[in-house]
Image (cartoon, rainbow, N blue to C red; front, side, top):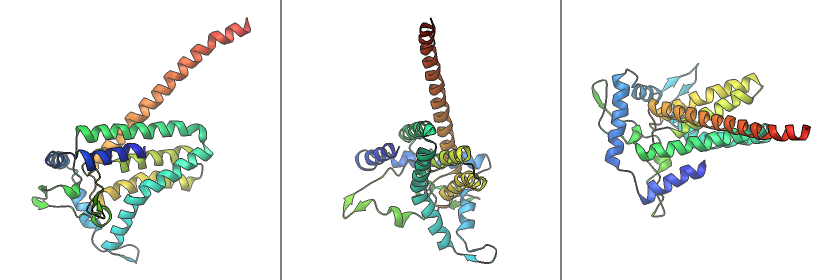
Length: 251
């Protein structure tokens, strides 16, 4: 799954970049759809959370929120996924192939979508309107992602791969796996909250719209249905093939 994402980033970031104009226009269409249906709330969420807040006494500054959001976006996406995958492999190995196949197919569907519908993230989208005023999302990730160069050598990534959100998709898969396989109630609650935290994070960092998260959930649903359907079909074929052998041995 990492190789699929990395391959897309290498190709689109360094060899054949997506058309920026098309990607920004596609992002405007998504934001426009949300606005037309009354749930273009991402600007309000980012504005609210990037102001000083008081939570049960302690003061939380915008820099605190940015550090937390960037950490979740940059590190939890990888390390929570690796940790949960390792736990499944170690403690529920019979379930691991199913989870692995769902992850691989989800990523494959995402890459197809990136090619068919390149889309800029909110932080790179210009020409947005919110509450009848021009609005531009704050880019909290710039100092992490940087200029796309290392010692003068281009190390580009696919900046126009917002739809669907792989962060939301991976978080949903891992959260559902924890809900499915964990026995400790507290761990299961954490599993349920993790996708919610990731969706909030991708909005606060200006990396995705809510529809991107919905697209990630759709990719997970399609991948899960396909993998489960193929598993059931192969199981039926295997049982059908084994039946004559058992009859022959009994005779």
